[in-house]
Image (cartoon, rainbow, N blue to C red; front, side, top):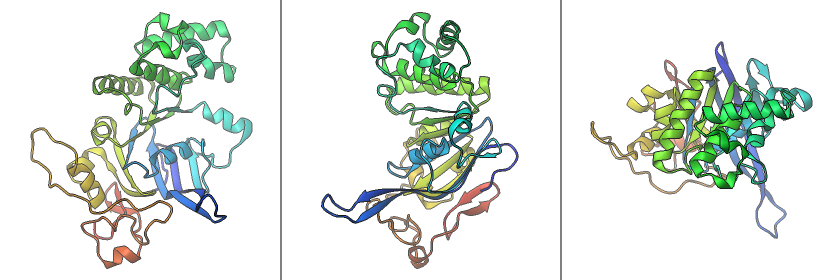
Length: 323
């Protein structure tokens, strides 16, 4: 996949490995293959849902996209510009256009700061307004995300989980970014609150025209918000497809197995696919296709040759020898 017209964020052949010691007494250094040669495009104004089991590397990829973590190799292009090696003032200016909503609304807010200061911190850091202007702007933004004006003078511990996530959303959109990485933004919330936050995010996207890279393990959430869905497994990209096509006719056997586990109400039930074995260790991933140790379609070639990530149908990309 390569960035073209209308592509806001393009990740090309991204690698990120984390060194770990073999044991406490050992000097041997092993490496966790968190992201292993992944490419992904995020179109301007659209939502790309990034899904996979825990430990597949999706959160790491989201943070690499924002340069919160630097990749070991590969290229990050944002708004037509290579930002892979940007540093200092140039990177600080670029960050105004890239924001993140964290998974845990309890730990992502500074407990010693009032809400107005949390929401307005970006404006202050980038010299966009003085403190009096920031208070007025923060009040308007809090109202936009469904909180009252008196929330501005309170501290994070005085709010529920859903309200804290609304504060996190207000902070993320304060600088009118072009891209927001939403890292499991509703997984820590009650189901009824999840729906409210998802609808708020979709309304804000329509109003501001920003793009989302939406990270989640919940396929129902991904289906609700995404224009394009990317499926990761053990550091590798398995499938990227338009959301409607992926949920109607998944191509990759891993995607098929994930969808078969989603409960359905009404309609034709999907074939139940039970994966065998356990997820291999990302420290010593299997050769060939990463998924072959659990795949119901695996053959000898899957054990020896890593499948290329290629266009299997118009606009649909997979990494499988038999799609």
